[in-house]
Image 1 (cartoon, rainbow, N blue to C red):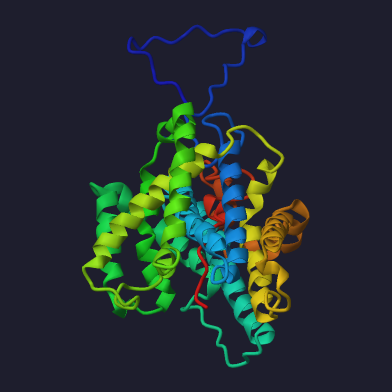
Image 2: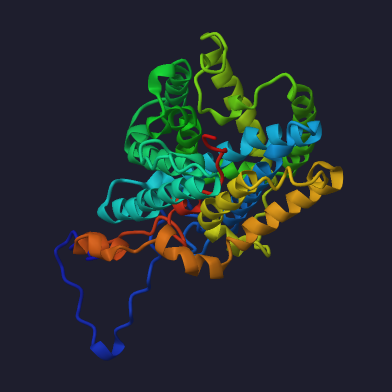
Length: 408
């Protein structure tokens, strides 16, 4: 940075070179909103809170997928499933929105969006489709990039949400507007399956809310009173879920269908959209209040949650295709349910380790310098003053790891 001329027009006397002192370095001013990239504001280090949150949310995703075949035979498993699915996906979408606050369509960020979201979508949508053909004995199952199957819908949603980030930063009252759009989507059965737009639009309010969050909002969750209050809130949620299990269709929580497709009158669309938004937001806040702020043994795994998210689905679906839950009765017994839960948590943890990340980096975080011009391929360094959107391991889109189960 150059110095402006002095008002008087005088020049400073020249100081001999031997006595010239190096001007003190000043830290670059952090972007508005603080550590939007998962790093401590102005510290240059990753904020362990976000890595912890991503890892714990991913473990809940894996557990939820493991509980799904047990929900019909176990009311307890069904209650846990409903409770977790009420908040784990919204919490992750909120964090993804928080990470996306700095997206401005700059060349290096567009490149990261393509290589970190669009390319993994193509790879894993194709991979999952071929896996279903083979493992489920369904050779007629088509490969369609317009109709996401199972886990891959979240990558489509994140791509669309991030592209619209400048719009949500410009309009007034973005969260109510996003809720209005989600309500219209809930009563629009003609949206169809293309790009899973039902989910893209119905989860949109959580992403927009994340865009509007500031670090001080998250700091409020650190208060002891909030953490203590989260205990009875979760206990009450479990009790309500236990009561609702035989009375409520879990498809409401997936947000992949309109109310007409769920057999409900149209007026329930806006009502359920707002009610579920409030319940999900409350439980997501309680979850984030419990997330450790310090480094833990699993903090480093938070940088690899996209790997665990995309890869664990093969085992989750394979267990259904190959009839593992029906081969014997023990998974449906209490100890068996505990064992299934621990196996799911251990498996997804393994998939977040550095060894797995190195093995599958070509599919999840491809560099693809050959596909971009010099300005794009060079990344943040190609733009003067550019700042990385996230810490080591990529943008927030690479940290997103939780998702509701996809189309069966």
